[in-house]
Image (tube, rainbow, N blue to C red):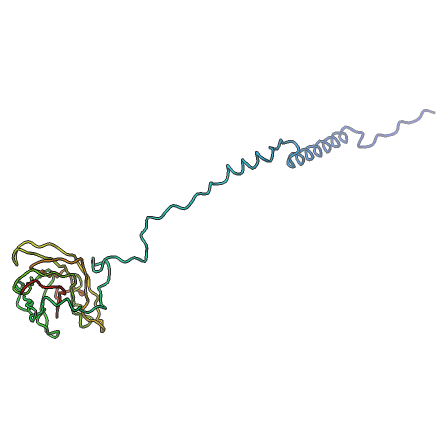
Length: 239
């Protein structure tokens, strides 16, 4: 009696063989990828070259540039501009300086927009000038002789919209209506400083025959300005 052929298993069939082959290929590809990622198939540089590469890639350290900004502790010149330094308020006239505008020292007004300007140098802090923006007055010193000065003071008795805010000082040597040169523009504080109510503004010492005070703005919306008293500290040359 002839033997019957045994039936083949599934792995011996064509589909089984293809499936097995696919699995083997997938496993091999995964192994190759893992080995490649681990660096088995790449040529590594010597340690010295690796160090050089890292040094080239990193930014080079340099010393910080020297700053050209001025020392923040240094102060600007006093009373230089409306947006600049606050007025000096803690100094009194020294023995070698006098108020050149005071009547007892020979000070006088020689030109102004109206008579009330006389009240700005009469020694009375309760009287005042009834002034307007853009008005100006010219002061002369003893015997109308030149004088040297470096400080101007203006009395602020209380906070008022009519207080002068920005003003300009000018000097001249010809005559009251001649040519004048500006010393600078200055801004007050709209408040009474009880320790020294004359707000003072300093500038490099100048020598001149006349001083012009020009009003540029008030602290209020109106152009009306009230000035009670002003001072000019310096040394007179008149005999």
